[in-house]
Image (cartoon, rainbow, N blue to C red):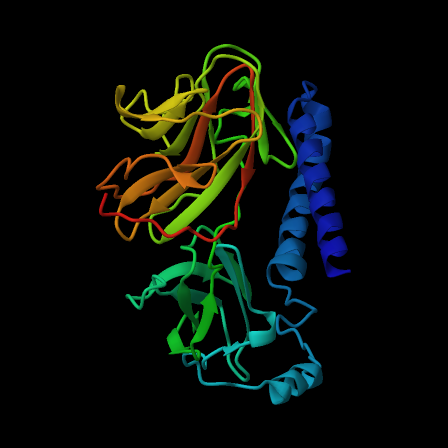
Length: 355
């Protein structure tokens, strides 16, 4: 209301000023003298009135605002707060019934510690041979599967929780035994994918090729420790060709016979005889070949670091290769006219390594 009144006074004063300006423009001196005295009094009166009513007028509203706040909900919320001292979490608890081992993979499950603030977990495992522990998982999940482990090995696992304050204590250890013998198939991606020229059937256990050029197929697991044995049955052998059996590094050449480069270790065989081959060097011819229905066994002994072969369950010559260290994948190379089926999870035969 006071603001509206002041605005009206300002508009009246502005109008008076504009009227005076127009009067000063009057060219008739007699007329100007008639209104001059009146305008002087009017302006003087307006000036006095302005100072009395506007300039010196006190505000009708107090500058102090009376705010009454209802702080009851805030006080109630403060009373309900639970303050805890931040400290590292307690040890998680392993859930044995949810832990398992399958082939060369293990699954570890645990539950969060009670009365602890947890931001994440760290799962550690040893090397399956009683060695040092190393971190294999860090995250918020309470279950983890670790693949690509050694076969026939006992792995110990432990887990700890952490938050911004620090890391807690380790859980109790749990031991998980991987499979004694390896089960695997051909790996279509490791073997070159859809453009490899290979045909995989029977749940990737059977392989054949369309063309005359040799193509390498790799198994789905790599070995760096232990004794491993697998066999192939010759389902079809109609051409005068030389399939090659053995092991290879992961970066072996896929477009040539196994053993033609330094990444493959192989025995290639025809209807009458076989040769051992590595880095295009073939040697030690052994009499005895294959036909439809034959079996070819591959024995990789990484305890002695040697590779041997069997044909129809009989040793094909002496030890083929020695001083094998690192990671090796089961491998074959085939071309048109040959179909092979892989058989795994077989106990290794006893061999005489002195010959």
